[in-house]
Image (cartoon, rainbow over all chains, first blue to last red; front, side, top):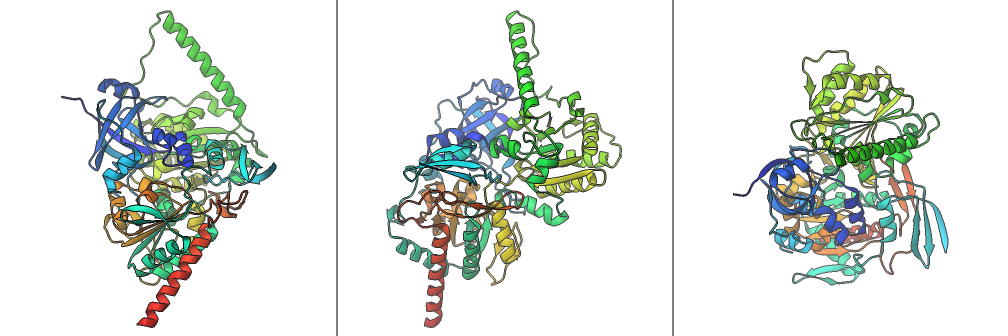
Length: 132
Length: 486
């Protein structure tokens, strides 16, 4: 049985995602910067994966394949960090806690290695989700 | 070739107004003083992703049409819908936002801006307890203690530190850039020593794991003269790496940590060893720093507004500032994201009384985030059409909300092809505000700044303001005709 790791999903900004969004949502820069997932090096060891291995991130709201990247600064055990974008938002919590703001940080998630699965392109993701 | 100086950058809430552009053959060829995002925006404004003509979805495919057809069709959709959402507004000028308010009132829809998924909770917090704040200029000249809580300006507002806080020379406080460079040199030295030790076989401490994750003791250097930079975050962000002191808070525990600091500021004792992963003895040292500074500031971001507690986190942060103001001088400011989201809140408030999530469906403005906010309306599947301008909710809303957005007629006004325009039914291209259209934008500290027009838009491309003006005119025509018919 494949090993799964329970984590807390955080989504947010990175400078690469910022540059990507300004360059254009259909650019390679945007794709590369929003289809990655920062993980703690200790957590990656537990799953037996290295940087650039594909992982499947599952939450109660969906599942998405992303590239795991070792977080380069300090430890963040039990947390994963995905830059804002359509991939992250396909799995974040809808819960607006009655104030209008979805819970973009703090969604419980599970991570498992998925080296045989590929990351969907923007067109594939949009087609899969919205049929357009 | 010509050089345009003092251009305002239309990317983030910093609105840096010292950008220098070189224009050759009607195109921007060089950008000076800008950050990576600014350079990308100014140099790649004309790309293959730019939409050159209006598009309408016919038989499942987006096909080119005239502006007249796209505007007429959009006006028809809005005039005939019962509960349309008019969302976005944060990356356009206040002149366009003003027409947006009139259009929303005319069609009896929901007027909402990107603050709803950004600093909406901050606005709710401010409405609960008020806000002691300042302009970025005052902070630049006077602040000697700068705190970033739950935000990473190095990534999201790259020039915030160099223009307004730790790395700028103010009238009364100096830049800490040199001491930061010395710190980097020292850390490179430490790494070399560690690498030499590794090669010689001396056993090193392993990388930290969950068990030994701990906040470091506040360094002695915090007591020196000059500006101090402290970062509170759940992970060591780029800004945290540059800080004089980084406090790693457990995810979702910011509220507890701030309440603990409030208690300590009021000289109360805490009967626990740690709060939110931070030892109380370190919090006591932090509180000493807070009380003994001359002018302190807390900047906060999505780490507070999107985590558990949301607007309660902001409420307690502002209350902490109030408490601190009994002991010294402190201010607080949200790190606003889009370059004119502050403008959207300001214009909406000035025109309707409310900053976002304004519901005009009963003919007068109502405001109740959680009920009249766009994500909730979409999740409850109540809207029957949408006009999205200068934003990309299909990228930034949770998937379930976007599913309903896509099911109904969707009008998109944007210069570029983005995810929302990919799934939209009508796509109206517009000129880029701040590059091809002059206007006004509000900086994160509510200072309005002029945006310049530096090049001409592609031939035939209209501005957001003009497009909205024409849609509004057309909506009024359609409505008056249907009233006559009745």
